[in-house]
Image 1 (tube, rainbow, N blue to C red):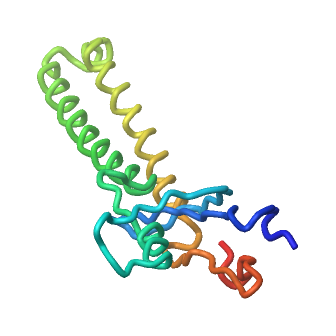
Image 2 (tube, rainbow, N blue to C red):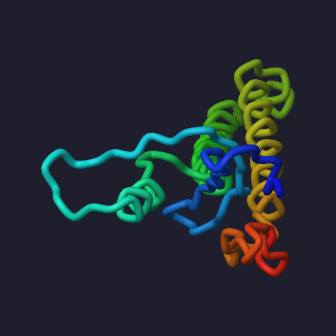
Image 3 (cartoon, one colour):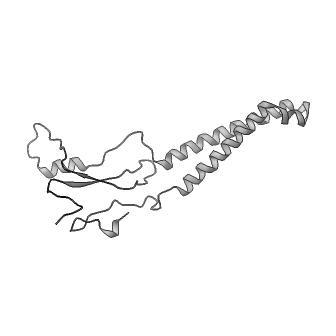
Length: 161
């Protein structure tokens, strides 16, 4: 009988996923078929068996410098908030410097208009990123466990993502 559409005992299915080291959220599980794997065997180490090599092959790997979408969005959101405050301060200084010329001078000033446009752009980006951070989080909310296989090598429905 075929399991997962595999034709030989040398074929298999690898499941991989990522877990953010910062926020502990899990990515979706990716499944890939294979017909061979390369196992690293230390040259002069005696007593290693196939199970030891497979354990080494399947151990978690830490990927430095990789952030999940939510953590990246939160970082960008902080930067946008800083830029928004900076732009608001620039607007206040610009309007104060033009205040003696009257309200019409402020509304006609190209630099003030550019700053207000920049402020508007940052506000839109902020709203979009806040929505992503608040609603884009994996519905499992970090409580996800990778699926396990039952006795027939099928994904256990109780652990299905």
